[in-house]
Image (cartoon, rainbow, N blue to C red; front, side, top):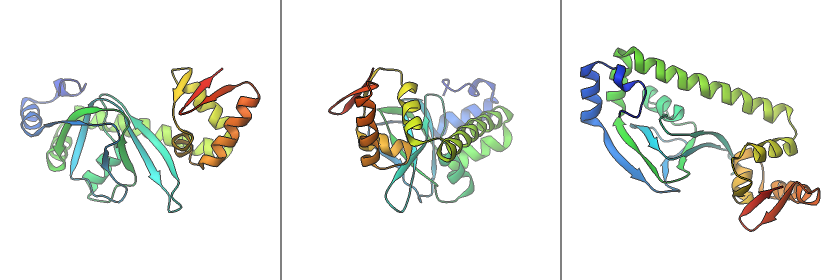
Length: 201
């Protein structure tokens, strides 16, 4: 648990409580942590890996809400576990994931008593709220081709391994629309398309 910035600031009692209930877990790429509508009983403390959290519409289309990275916790997971309500999204491992699972009751006890952990949780919610506001703004005011171009430029590599279907789910549209836009980008010399990957020129 030392990977989390708040841990050293907790009381000895809280540290002992966390360590005594923490279950170390390793989960493979593609594993579903919880589904939209599930009620979360455990809370994940992510140490290594990436988790995608998305919202599924009744039409079957998805839109990515955010990605969970090292040293973070999932807001959807926390909200469901803390309030005993169904999860508003689905979480899936985007890589091999390592971390700790703790019972919600234990985490709620520490949250109620420990200011450092409260501050950590509030900072998570503030960051996610800012991200969600940006997502809403993009969906409402940006054309999809601009959103797609922004997404491509935000990636760390010039060669992006992703399917058109997966990219469509990130942006909340259909595979056909993404394929059409990427073909236009290729025609204009912005990208070169390969099977299962996109080369940004």
